Each structure stands twice: as C-alpha cells, then as structure tokens.
Length: 170
Figure 1: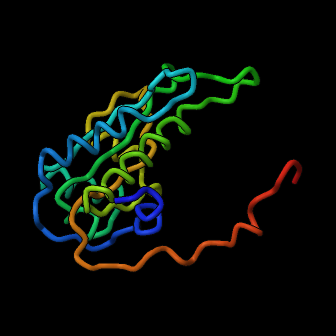
Figure 2: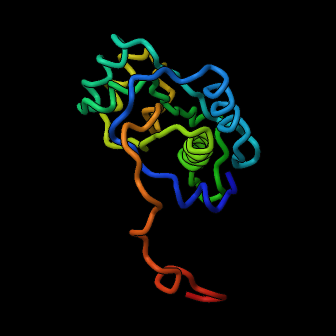
C-alpha cells in the first residue's frame, strides 16, 4: 500500500476476528519496530509478544476490555530507561524511543492488513507482574494485533493543518 494511503486508512480497532496472525506477518511487524530510529541509536526497547489465551486473560487485570484479550496477539512495548539517551537538561528519551518503535509496529501491522489499538491506560504494575518484567524495565504501551472484525473508513476526524502547523515561529 502506498504510504500516505496507509496513514489515512490506519484506524484503532476494537473488534477482532479469531483468525490467527501468520508468523511471517508477525515477524515483519516486529522487524519494523526493531528498525525504528532512537535517540543516539540506543534502542532501549523490548517487545513482548503474547499469544497464550491464559496470559492474555491475566492481562485483563491491567486493562479490562473483552476485545483486548480476544485479539489473537498482544504486543507489549517496554523500555529500559538506563539504556536510553538523556538530553543535557536531564530529559529522558526512553518513552519517545519506545513510542516511535510502537508506531512503526502499528503502521507495519496496517500494511499487513492487520488491526491494532494503542493502549496506554493500563496498570503497569499488573502488566509487569503478569509478564515477569524486571523491575528496572518500564511498560510504555500495548496493542492487540489481529484481523479487524469490521471495516472502517479513512481517518477524517483530525484538526486541519492550519490549526496545528506553524512556519518559522509559533
């Protein structure tokens, strides 16, 4: 799919078919995340792929939505703050780096004909407990991954460029 059409067609999916995600597609999607840029090329991310229905059901304690746990796959994007670049003023970039990797994953999934939904409203402590994530690692985002149960049209509910773009100065 042409890139700009892909960006227009990518939607947050909250209903998934039970069809499994092909391993080749999953690996291409994860490779897209791996190839994401990061500050100073530190690549502080880790991806956890959850397919086991029992584990997904446990994740429901962190994000209680039926459609989330019914998707064939859940990808959890984590970051190691100690492995990330820091700006001179101390601003840490691990969240930014992991978010860029997540966006690569989401766009790659759309390109493969799969749906996703960026999840940020979860209980990190529960996710870490369920997935045995080390204490120093942070959970940045999660997404279900699977074939959409319903088709949606292109994105239309965004502000016009005139409201958000500034040239040379604010």
